[in-house]
Image (cartoon, rainbow, N blue to C red; front, side):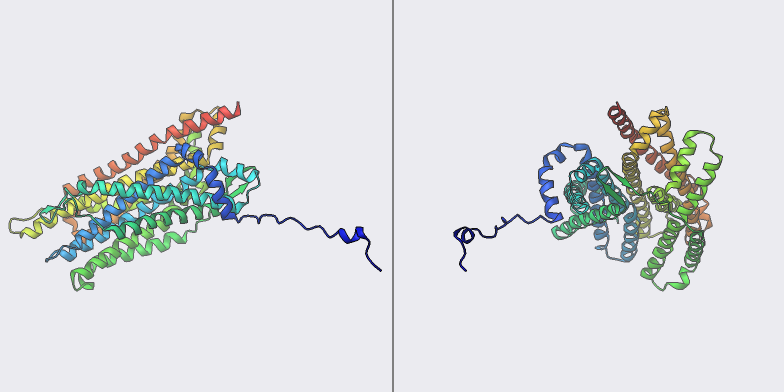
Length: 469
């Protein structure tokens, strides 16, 4: 049987070859290119994170350059200078890393509306998250490059500081091209990791982007472990003379005696803050007091991340205050006289950098919190609560734990310095005057950064009301 002409010419239709569906990352790159002009135009979405990351980069590179300069010092006191500069670097890592993380979270939080719109248009969750990481990485790279420029501009300024009897010099903090490139890559990587961790806690849906609010349960065992660590550190500080055989070993023990209590305070702090917030919520008599207490109770760990850097500052403030009580005797050798002066200069410099970093971190974190809670603030305003009262509750939720951290951290600092410096130095007029003044200055700087963020709150409320109308 032969096929008819009709059946001979009718074959199975061939499906046209369709283009392969791009991967989530490829789609994210395409979307990023399309939205590049709009992203650049939205200066409010990237200006503050870039500024924060630039500040982190500039200060981190300057501190690292200072440590490298101190490690080039020789002579009898060389190991002591090197150990003290390393301790200062370790103490500054915590607030600098906190500031970088806050900048990354702010960069992510400014894109809520865009992310939900893309989900509504059919973009997958992976694509949206990839787009966020791409944009955050670009912001981090820009901030790191600007930070390198800031570091180069600060080199002559820090070069005017005098240590070991002479100035550091305009090129004294130079690290080299290789370390600068590694620092830029490190800042970008740290920002991406922080943003990725933040995205894990975010639910991205077509109807909006919201953060899962899961109040963590903090066990009282934190206080027990932290208390034992602080007591052990005091014991080490009291017996350094028996434990250490040379200056280098003594510096290691001193560093441990300072670092362990800081870690212990990170365990104790959130639990204590939550406990006091529960007490404040129970006895609250005004709306702002109740809202502030409930804000802290939502997540005490988040509040601690904002103000916990001041625990380190309290330690440094105590050390700085004690350093002012030392005066070189007429019989002292020139090296000892320079060492005492350099200890004061280094302590004040470390304290100033730490104050500036924590104040910026609190300001940026609060800006991100305002954006995350925009619906709450707009809702309170619609219910008749004045913006000034909303701002008062927000500032109270930060300042009350902050004062608690400052006072609660200064006391362990005194206990640790007491066996190292002696009762006469700790109880001197210079220590008792300088230490509180330094702490008050730090608290005032953080309070000023909170005042600045009111502009963001006012803008968010006004924008929400305009949309409602």
